[in-house]
Image (cartoon, rainbow, N blue to C red; front, side):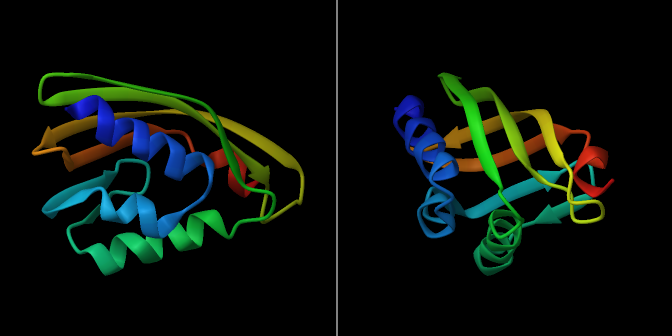
Length: 119
C-alpha cells in the first residue's frame, strides 16, 4: 500500500509536478523542512513550496529511491540546479522520512544541507 504512494511521489518529484505531488498528501498532513525550520500543514502552502522549488534555475531531482515498510517510509534523492547567487551548478543529497496512512502521505520530514544552492 505505502509503496504505491511513494512510487507516485517519486514520479511527481522527478517530473517536477507540484499538483500531483501535493495530491498525495492526506488532508491533515505535516510537512517539515528541517533545513529551514519550516512546517506546513496546508495544501496550498505546500503547493507554493513545491512551485517555488521547482522554478529554480535548471532544477532537477535524480537518483530518487523511496521505500516503505508498513506505515513508514524513507528515501534518498539528489537535488541539482544552478545557484541563485552565483549561477554555478550545485548538487545536494537529501533524505525524506515518511509516515503513511490510507495510501497517502501523513507526514514527511526532509533532511539536507541547502547551502550549495545559495552560494
